[in-house]
Length: 412
Image: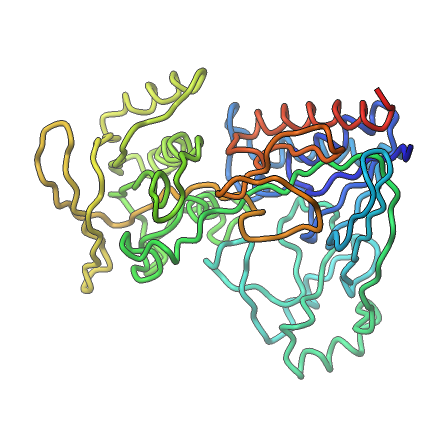
């Protein structure tokens, strides 16, 4: 029996699973495809249930990782092959190069000296970034990474003379022997390019809920000031469109569980920042389970926040002002509404990463890409790889997966 545990995915559920197993004495490998741990939580302004900034929970996790010798972390790493069976897996992991020092050297000046820009995935396209970057100020590991493919010839020549950059670093493979694998591959926001009927991609002031999180975050592109993308104006009348691509046979068939709570939370962001602002939330059903019902009631008690039960039929841009017109039917009164807003936020759903990515594993997934729960094969899914979850439930799922993995490697 191989005694080690492999965790694929360094988001909140993956980190929790890895730490719980490592702190019980197991040898654990944590593999994350991006340059940093933290997953989607790192991109939020605040998260439930306590409305903490992400640094609050993540810094605790990072400290636990730093202090645990049983846990080894690989970032910019991809699982490329898996063979064997429960208790005896052989896993090949490809490590992509950072081209930067193996320490937390401040390369901000060097980064700013570069001329070329690249798409900023972390900011969901709201701004560009340099090819030499560190996504967030509290990133772990706190190391810059070089996006070599987006270098101009001028920048490549400049970096070739720097003692802190190694342009010749190459990817390499490592082999791990593990007894159990925890699959914590997480989620991605549903692609808004599929939602042109709701204004996504064709109307500048029609944004996604995750873009809204970045606008509200102090570490975001506007340093926490919520501004319209078209002109940086403060939006004082904003609409939230629920189930944008969810509960729809043409997009995502299921409810993503957290979207209603996210919009209620973001309505508070706006009202706190602009006391004279107005918010309308267009919904099919408001899902605020358990302890979140009180949060919803408190939010909707604000006379400047209105919940409208009705499906949005049309979204149009006012070309002169950049404002957005929404046409919808109020399902309660039966009235047809056409209302003008300064900005619209689409509450897009959570799609499992495995809906668009593949792993060299024999997995049983449903038509939406969620992994069926099973602990009989030694491969144990956790977090949003199984179903849409909030941060608290993702952590609980990670803990449960760690216990199952430990039982597997100990032969119980």
